[in-house]
Amino acid sequence: MPAQAPSRAPAPPRRRTALRHRLAELRGADVPAQPLDARALAALAANPGCRRRALLDGAGVDKTALARSLGSPSGFGQSQFAFMRGNAFEARVKADGGAELLRLTHGRLGGGPEPAPGESAVPELAAAGPEGRAARTALALREATESGGWTLLDHPMLALDVAGTLAFLEPDAVVVHPDGGWTVVEIKSFPMIDGSADAAKVGAAARQAAVYALALERVAERLDPAPPVRHHVLLVCPKDFSNLPTASAIDVRKQLSVTRRQLARLTRVEDIAAELPEGVTFDVRRPAAELTAAVEAVPATYAPECLSACELAFHCRARAREEGEVTSLGRAIRGELGGLTTVSAVLAAAGVGSEGAGGREDPGDPAVAALRRAAGLRAEALAGGSALTGGGALGGASC
Image (tube, rainbow, N blue to C red; front, side, top):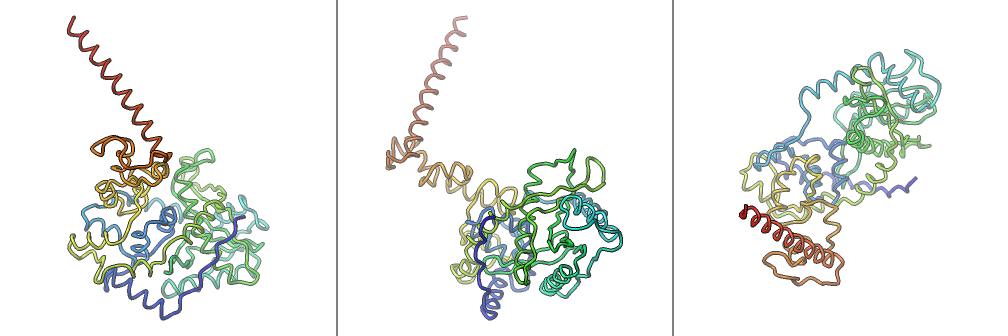
């Protein structure tokens, strides 16, 4: 098991209050904050170098509305039909006090005797505000662990410190086993056919569940002794083409390790905000030109993967292409090119385009050497193709 990154000490109350005021100013004083959910955190952990997303998510800015105001509306999102279908399936899975869900949990993960119908606990988690719900969830988890029975926590609230701001996360469910172990449950509406589901969707669910498991570990650390948070989460999906639930245990140790490491690398939101010019705001009611300048004041790290994870991806892609950034071609290509960060620099190193042969790049650089070799092969291929085309044209004329 990989070593856990040391947790940061919580900020003093006065400092945290000042940060909240600052983030509210960036968002718009009377604009409600958008909650930072596990899906957004998973996407943020996948691209920890993007200060723009870290600040906008930390400030609770509505990125969908912001992208619309910038003239680059988001191109993804869940349809209303899929949302309703997912809610209906989740209600079926949790019916009768979660009897079917607990049966699936026991069948896939064990953790004690088989749950008896009507003997499992489903504590009430309602409280005022997210802080109150998080505190009520922590108390319910402690009581459930001490009880030694099966307990289902329906939509608990977990808190996780992310780059200096608290994110409140709401998993579909958490199950406490009689042996004291805690399990995160993810309920999805995509089908599991013959025991397997779409790999991309399962991967996304695993990354999201890893965020919940990380937040759950933070709760467990405050108890003595700390209960074990299982590294296998329960993924519940419709079976085949029916609406009957089936489940699979997904090992998320790799996703947990990556999420810990990437979130620890995030620049603190207060540090990013301190570098902004005076008067910058992301209030979507401001003119488009002002919003564009505000967004451009925060550095972004665009990659094609952002198109499926961030509402500002179209805007950032357009800017990356305008500036000739090689990141717009993908992280793999960016990694192969070393210190060559722009398309013009790549062309100059290869001796292609207006920069002329060779440019100023070091020929001893492996990336430069590979580019020049590739440019030579391309020139030979084009020369050969031109000769073949010319011969074909002459042959056609003679006929």
